[in-house]
Image (cartoon, rainbow over all chains, first blue to last red; front, side, top):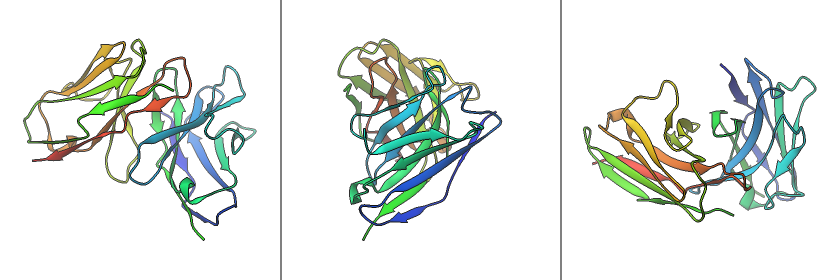
Length: 117
Length: 108
């Protein structure tokens, strides 16, 4: 069974960038899709984007288009999300998830990103 | 974007109770709806997908129903470990993927 382990918490200054990783054990992202979801403090979940292995190229939410990049490493065992031009509104917990056609399962443990001057 | 509205936002219940949570979509999504459980500080866990298919390993006291725009998650007999936040997700063809705002289930 695939497990996803994410990188640790980050504190960033406004205007900077952050890159969060998500390592898969027991499988690769060549077989399964990966999506990234953000949960702001006290808020619901926002889908940021994902990669479908059938197509290979990432798809992004319009809200994050141009500011977010989702990639995988050469072995396709680690996925990354990079968010640029950070503001305080980007503070939140970032989750990766194995994205099947009809559900996300499992999810990574989450990575807290705090944007503060 | 497809909006998902959950009701209620907060629910107080006792062990042994039967509870139902509703998720309404702003437009029809067939049965492309999933339900998740999240406990504080933990990652969400899949309970149900395609509106009514129980994920392997999830207790049978959880059930889902609905299609189109109205969906329900029912817990038949609440157990102590069921007190958590529940949220729905639509995975229709139309992007973006969206989520309900969540229903927090507390012990009465």
